[in-house]
Length: 233
Length: 232
Image 1 (cartoon, chains in turn green, brown):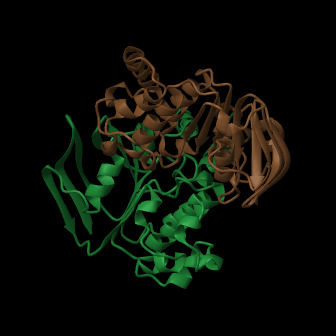
Image 2 (image 1 turned 90 degrees about the vertical axis):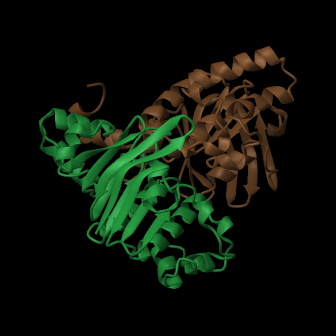
Image 3 (image 1 turned 180 degrees about the vertical axis):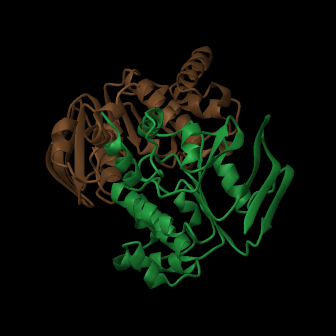
């Protein structure tokens, strides 16, 4: 299973967002500053945006799913349960997973933003798509929601390709590769943990651990805590 | 100073709360009433019961700036420069002054190169910065920010935070899920189930939240290893 972006260019005014790279099964963390092209990558990877140049090849990928940055863009159901069903997943099970089993008959727009994000995350994670693209999945979640989300995303690590575009720095699942936008060009920093040394958007604590020669094994809070505690103060 | 008395509205039940001038943060779990409180402070909703006064006036009588978490909903104009200029146009500010103030605020937020772009082509984070510039450009007395930082990277959040604090707005109230930002507030209000669970300076509020995921990550790292925080 592989997603190949070959010299893809997406024009935005006079700017070209350049995307090249091979995405294998595992979790791919994608960082970049505001407007660098993360959401564009998400749309191209999910097949919702056709690039003006270059090619996108999906090998062994039978299905793809995108979680939008703005959860309201997903809503088509009149009730929370209808919304879950629209993803062709067992709605009751998903609502339990999202902690919303008491809200079946409510209008999705009456959910708080965090609740709506949990609902949609539970829906896309319940589907077993070969390619799952998550555009800012931690946005609008409180720390408990982020903790829940990172654990749920972590469960998908060995089940297809997960592209995780996020600014989140503290509540991350274990990831396999790190990608970053340098300007508007996507660059692969490599496999974790080797990639941590060249991760320019790394959280301060990770950067300092790398500088001290005690890099964490991965980017989860547990890995960072372990590295911090074994490093001399 | 914002003064709340006997507030009952939707989930909110706040007998009394004072938010002093400066930079205040409202934190708390999803669904705890943060956005509802912010909308009341902005005068976008009328409280069912109770009184909200800001600087001794009803919020709707103040010059307010409000940044929604999903600012794409609120845009009125096609171009970024027009969107940012709109509060000044509505106040009949002379055109040359409008142009100067729009340019200055955009530059201060690092979005000077976006002014000729169409709002609909902006990324989520760029939309937030455009909305923030629009809120700041008239020089509001009260600035309300609803989790706008959830769409920004860490560097941009730090830059924008500095700009907001130096903008000279007497009262800024921000909802955020970033407890490292909350730790820098002058006043922190922690809501749970529509009630004020904690309120005060961040060190006092977080001392009650130690051991929970609400504790600021940078403080936790410092406790693990004191050499890992602060400037390198």
